[in-house]
Length: 299
Image (cartoon, rainbow, N blue to C red):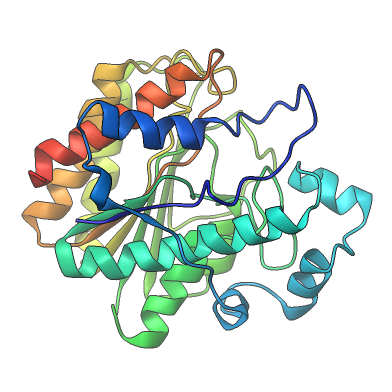
């Protein structure tokens, strides 16, 4: 199996910036150190093409972002300062999502140690997301005939509003989002299935609602699943507002991945959000997801 990383395109952040950019390199290192993945399984994400981006984004937005011409308000909405390295990082994240799905179709499972940029809309970025990796790869899969039906299982604590907005008109896509009702984004979009959670939800209620939602996903009969496995649902997360334990997270991931494997549906994973302090708690969450994947798929 193959898994893709894009931290070779690191991007400079101002001192005390609230986004924990170091988590990507930490995850890659600890996956190998803890023998969850073998080093040779890790591949550098390729850059996507402009044609790939045009599947989900407007030409004007792409041009303005990549030339550094978005205004301060537009970049503030994204949440990162502009740089050439950041442009390459965004293209690598989308390229990694494409490579991951192609690998998953061959091997049953793949993923990238980044991605899940689900707040990015067709013509604007938001919430640390500029290009929407899973929207692009879903539309690429349909265009190329890799799949006729694509399901997005978005379990980040924040609704994937950009994914819902971009893929909503496509009957061959099914987007399920399980997220905090009162959490960001405060103007929600309509997914095919939105399961909203109140603050303070614990493991059992969360897993019960997830199980009900997965029944709708499997009823859609997708050819592939794009899994947004955010760990900001953890009770340690400073932005999550839920009370999910590592055991609950492991069971969540197992239910998604085992359900797909039992049905012969390839899965491509993105790691999504994680904002704990210290950030090691979020990294431990990502490691938990990969342990669940290792148990289900036996790699």
